[in-house]
Length: 318
Length: 300
Image 1 (cartoon, chains in turn green, red):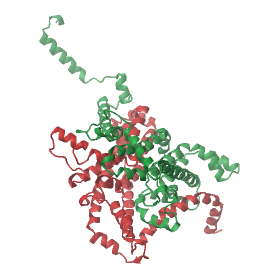
Image 2 (cartoon, each protein chain N blue to C red):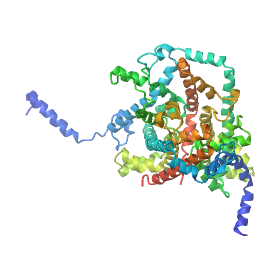
Image 3 (tube, rainbow over the protein chains, first blue to last red):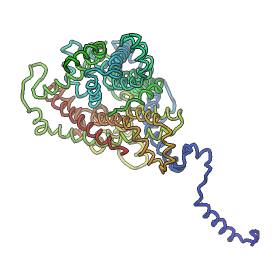
Image 4 (cartoon, chains in turn cyan, blue):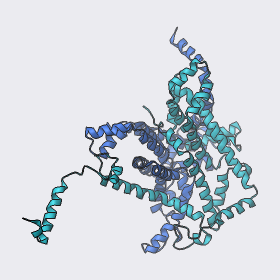
């Protein structure tokens, strides 16, 4: 039978049958697009990859939404902040809110620069001290066995398991006994001994090849020189991570319970004061939130590759 | 030479090492170990800082459970939050890290920053005060009003029906923290050749691949992430104060740490506050230990 003599109906039936017979046959050669989606692995389906990507996309939107709202609000003029219905995106972006914030700050008794200095001092002194002191402790625990080393490592891991809030009350009493209340030390000293930092640093140092350390030991260098000359340069990602972690903790610290003298208070303390002052300053509050938000995020963006390298060794081993 | 002599020699030989760890552990003792011990001691006393502490035995503990309905409410709230935020936040961190792992490097970095940002942003969660504001200028209210789903604005942050859900939602938004980064880094570190071998060995789909190869390889990171999740889930406090106020209406979102701060910082009843801290301390350790035991079974 010649196909040219088929009626339209017959042609349709034939096509259907052909398609049916094709269904069971797997297509061996995936398109370039499909290959990228399944990483070229036969045990992955394109459909599955697309579904998961769609989930990821929806999740990203949910995560991003409050951030967009926060950023957009900071640039909204006051009439847009109180418009009905409120818009997600700003229509006429303005820097007025930031200008108002700086006006407000320059009017206050204590100049803005003083609060900024306090925060920078606390963050920098706290972070540098944290890195130095944790590295000095991490090196012996990671690379040598001595009486008590195992016990101390376990105590540090254990202390990851509860929050600072648990020790906050006696901490105040201890600070006042030591005479550190109302000084920068009350914030900086506890930051030196944050256990997450020591934990991450110790795990990362365990990866430094023993051969390097053995060689130095034969040369007769002291442990401290070994740490300083050989180990520290090899663990750069780890100390950048420790800097980020302590930066994030200290940056948002209002020092509320520990520092009373106004000209020693850090920036967040004064920004929360502004933020709590009501509707009239809605624009200033939004600008403030953006500043508080953006600084740690930018610091993280700059350092993220180092942080992720450190985190690859962050596991708790049994 | 006796065992003790040997040990003593070992200690003397390691004196340089002890000198190196001394600064850290001196501070760690002063600001972590001693506070925990001091809390335990104070929890058996009545102490208001001004007068010397007075030993009262277990009275603080009996008062907590028998005579303080707000504390029982706080336990209930904390458990509800922890049971939802802990596991969901943990799984969310892992699943998102797992999905990101398939993406090209640039896109992966971008999404990592977006997901991680809320947890490091200090107090960016105050933006939810504007989103869930109780008047018609609040974003959520305005949208619902416009769509005609509601006829008058809802007091999201003062109505007991919604407060808990919103606090949980915001906490989940902030739950992709250090544990999430650890997962991302851990996934990158899994040896690629194992996946190829598994494909040949007949691992049928990505779920089998996840269970038989990825998860067992990630066990140390899973443990670390779990510690971070459990601790965070039990420590919700700042978010409730910022969103629903302190104390929250009818104590609807009052947590154990809110209660601890109330007595320790505002009322200066240090003995009572210490009892709360001690209970919280031991429950955090206990739950963490339990979760670790469960996680040892992953992929086996």
